[in-house]
Length: 381
Image (cartoon, rainbow, N blue to C red; front, side, top):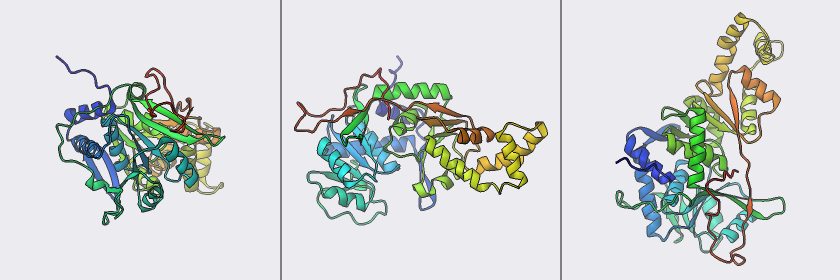
């Protein structure tokens, strides 16, 4: 009898670990070198982190805040929280202090992940938090008793700690302040994420052979919808840059086949292209201008490809890209024309949805849970 189809992100992670245990699942760059984790490595790490969280009192329905840019520790902890039946809530590390205070006051979490010392110190100013320190430089553990070093969190009892996640439990939640200064949230159940991810995988024909690049803000909902969920479904390789400052160079090294970004992302990359082209009088600039206007015969188009378009695609890391997604508003005309001239078909995917006000704990009639969205709905960031 065949096993039932996986119904949660942890279930899909376990499925990939069983199906392709030694295939590369995740790569991250540290000190200029790429480091790889197999699907078995990822599943084992997530299970051990989940066990460690459980030993420290993290249970089903709890929230784990992650104050971090894209990095593998934040992703693994997100899956670990979900493994325990909890919800991961990524936050922008550049969030202002007053906004962070509002988030902590309204959500009242007990567990928070911090990507560096400055974030640890910010969070320790708020009482009652258990802070998990990424400690990226592998220094001596922070002396505060409420701080746990990320490397000390895993419990080595893999293979027997069953996942508590349910299909209609929320996997991710995203929060922000609206125009009135009220805290609003948007939630994504496992079932919703899997449904949307399957649609993306089918439409874009994603396979385990694809490479994706996770340089967008970790606190953006599109990261969960268009990268993390499709990653565990299709089994492609997910890559994290060393930092936002190195993301363009890191993308060029990888030449990913899947790129997901906002119109601002593509506008920034288009500026890189423009910066690489010589001034208006040059023949290269004239060739690409003709391509932008869709002018020129077969010979001109061939010359443009070999002399201009192909090299430019390599410079911006799009030489192998076959699935270029813009999340939310479409590209402006200038940017769209440039990518069309580069023969990159950028396709738009939705990023709209309903934000709901979060009640203060003292106002809420019962403990805040994040499982209110029906699985058939498709909320977005």
